[in-house]
Length: 120
Image 1 (spheres, rainbow, N blue to C red):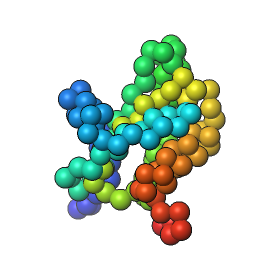
Image 2: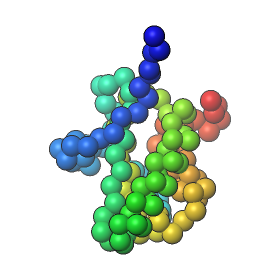
Image 3: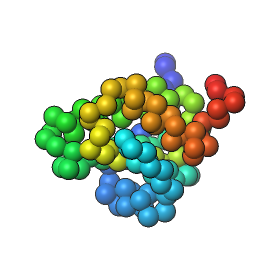
């Protein structure tokens, strides 16, 4: 029997997003806005929001994919127990994947979720 370890779960309920917006700390970048709130779970939960200001569905979905992939690459470095909401900005869908990765990494460093001196 194989044991599955849950690292990250999606946030889907509107009241959960609202709670994180209200009580969480926000970190702003030119490409993305991130809200971070500590939770009582033993795992991380993420939510990604894109508004219609970004453009048509194709652009919104591309922004979501870029954010999700960048987070997936950083997931191992982030400690467990956080609710993280990413809000895409109009620039997000125009950037390359490595630019979004650098933006999210920079936000996590400024939020002190990732230690620059001691990367795992």
